[in-house]
Image (cartoon, rainbow over all chains, first blue to last red; front, side, top):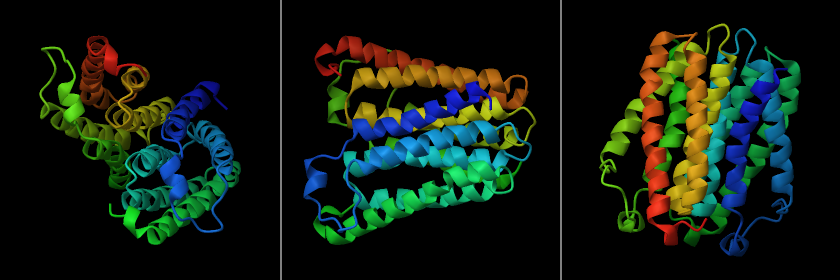
Length: 154
Length: 154
């Protein structure tokens, strides 16, 4: 693996992850009605730390391979959507717009995994929890929209 | 050019560009002291529309090429930083944090151009205005920090 590539991809993940500390869960989030299966607050940074490391690792492994174009396009798409979601949800509190973003993110992650499968089986397996996590986060976003209609006007 | 790649890269640009309409210049921004050379408000969406199209076009042209790994890594880094800047500046009003982000963005764009030069001369020239524009935007961010010390505490 090329360490320079790893560092650059990790930089992109750091930009996305910075939204988590700059737009943290606040008093408003705690007052929202959430389903019983909502992961505890501590689970989010733990999950994202793993996923960002795995994303940087997979990016650095796959970028130099022949036929990596589609994987690289989906990698770029998912990191942009990932960076966008947190400011829209926690910053603007626009729950429905955040839901649209996370559905797009889910599709981008599915596209990334589909592109990784024939290229690099290790990268595929290391990132497959990403789709599970975005499924949970998306279901949570949807549940919060339906349980808090007064907060979900936009 | 592969149109599927173009659409995916344009999707990433759309996520970045969505921050411009979701976190627009507001009353606070208009009250800030700005230098005489500040571009007018209308110039920003015009410049970004060109740059996002050029980014998607360059990404789709370059992604399938041999030796595109570094260009792809910098492409991903710049779109994440690009998506992050607007919510931090206009959303959080954290002028100094935004300045750090835009300096990182400048470096990512310089890295992208350096990686494009030997790969695809057309992509290089189409994206060279990006570095000029981020230089202007970065200088404006710095100028706003120094002219508005009371607004620039973070």
